[in-house]
Image 1 (tube, rainbow, N blue to C red):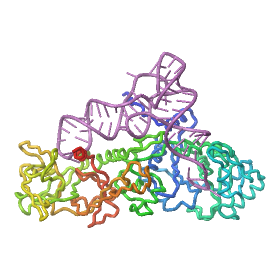
Image 2: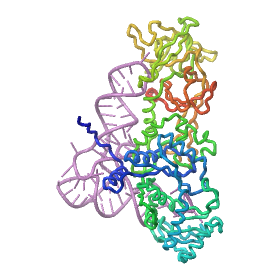
Image 3: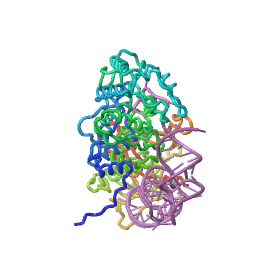
Image 4: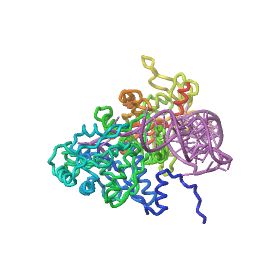
Length: 559
RNA sequence: UGGCGCGUGGCUCAACGGUAGAGCACCUGACUCUGGAUCAGGGGGUUCCAGGUUCGAAUCCUGGCGCGCCAGCCA
């Protein structure tokens, strides 16, 4: 049998490079790495990088390491390490074997620093941070050499050893590469390689009081691990020259290659650890895992399935163009997964009572309801039906506008999987507000079909009033009210005041009590919902993950 | 008035000298026991601009213009 010839998948520019390296015999399989700094929580932008690095490794039969870039003890915390590992696993990726750390290589990196001193490629500078800044020059003017640049190898060796020994306070001296103070690439103007930091490191404790900078540690860690393709975001482009310089000047065991791609940006949100930290610290959200946060843990609490996030990453692609993805694309990817996998349930967010006058008082019957029309394996369930029901308040209009298909006085609609009902009257309170609907039902329509072929234009969801379970439901919207938060002034002024709306009197189908944490269901006609971590037996709390695609809202908006 | 990088429908990406395509978004229609899903169709592009090379340029060359990044002992 001749195998189907499928059109070749279009490779992004990085996968093209990897494929070419394999084809040319330069590597047998790619080694990549995801290198988070443990100074905050992972967000959807990191998910793009995770999907890229782990995806390439898997597709080409290679491997992806998880390596913490823990070279700055003053910003890094153990708690972040744990959260990051959990989030990567939840996304569905496995780095197999041990978690790696740049700090595992501190001794080797130190030896390489000594090597650079011996070859005359590095020197200890006694200048202060201010002096170094002043002599670095500007974007248009060259820098000036440090007066300490030509120290002897012996003196440099001695000073560097004493830096390590803790003889000097923070900032007293640094180790710098001797490259070129006149380079048009500012990164190459004798960059700092080591600085004195008397701080306890989350992993190495007080073993060190000098720490390598990112540039000194990153490429060297890649080389130690045999990383073939070191993928990072565009802002590291300028650092590539230094990355290569260090690899060339050091006796490293392999020669990794840095490739940059555009980081993910999304409309209506912010992907900046600095800003996210402020949102948390200043109490604008419930925490790092607030369902409005673009963090992985926030998306999880919101009810986004990992598969949806992975599909999204595949959908946006990888390129070198700075770009901003419409938030709607993330929603599209998530809806596509949820539509396929989420079980359907009934829940009424804003209930109004319906009394079916010709339905026998005290009678209860059960109807069989399909759990997921997209997945027959999901089976069916029984739902109780009775004389008094809750339906959605806005599924009724006393004076229906044009193109409103739902319940209105004298109009017949279908109650999903149950009966056709016709509104025969309304009950109002003293203020004139409708508080109850009086209806009649047609016993011949049990199950939702009329023997005479009658087809109502609307089908409503409902919950039996005597069986309903009350719940709090939290409705979420964009964290920021404009697609480009902060574009015109203060970012925090653009926070959406309605990003969380709490609904207290929702009435749910009793089976919803059994939905577990991490499970997302569809409330028919409303959207996808998941239990919040605050949810307790007897005090249910659901988060709205997403609405269903809202055509009716569009019709309304158009008038 | 430095260096590096990037400019293709509203958004994200293809097209690698040979008729500018896809997904999302948008609009129609069909179907439907979710105003969902699904299916069918449609509109929308001086490929940043100007020159040049070529039978032929989104693609190669030159010059502009616009945008991004870089002057941390952050990553």
